[in-house]
Image 1: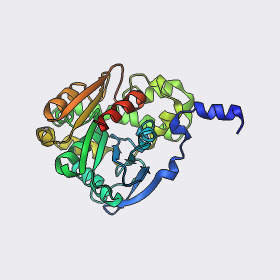
Image 2: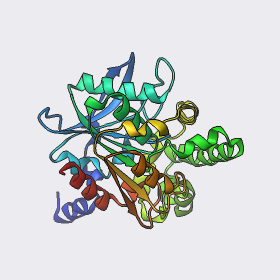
Image 3: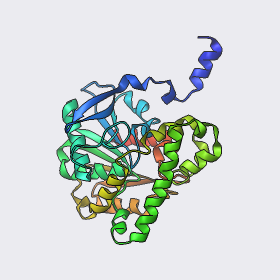
Image 4: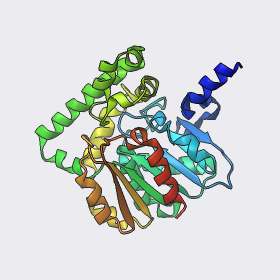
Length: 299
């Protein structure tokens, strides 16, 4: 490689320099194949499992996986019905997702792990910490869902509006998956991400295009219904593991007041709020998020 080529390669973000396919594999869980990214599979390393949000995919964590894999075993998955993973055999439920992740840990030979969940992934992480406390070392909620959703059971108009907004956003995401327009068009990038990040123009076209791998998947409606129908607030006091709550002050999907409520309801919890940041904290502020995550893991 020429000196100019080497310099250009060095300037590319770390996630673009990795052959992600070499870390991906299919794992049979609950009668279905699960798309799993497994980096640094050394069983002696502490394990960290990343769970995406509604209409997400493992690529939601592209900015965070490699930095942590330097000294941790890092797992990221496509939950059933999202990304490349097919729908589950017995339908989607919050408890079913938690069971899926625990059974995946069994298949990978992991006794205990830290769970890092964004939005719906945080909801699933809470369920795991409640139902399977011996399997959870620590819990990180990144704009975790589960609290404000309870209002959607009683306020049909609000729930309908939220669904329309989500379908609009993820419809644009489906378009982005099948075309390079999202890479070339700043206007489309802004429309695509305005609901979930504070400053869409600050994310690169290639990174945004990778996020669309979770869009237009069959699990969306069932997963949304499952979260709305599943009360968890009154059980959060059962979570005993250390918990870090990370939120963006400008989150337009999950209100920031939920961060304080999670902190109050979970015994050993503390929150960090990022200014001028939206719902996808780990993509909007990757360096700070990675540093805060590492500090929490090392406490």
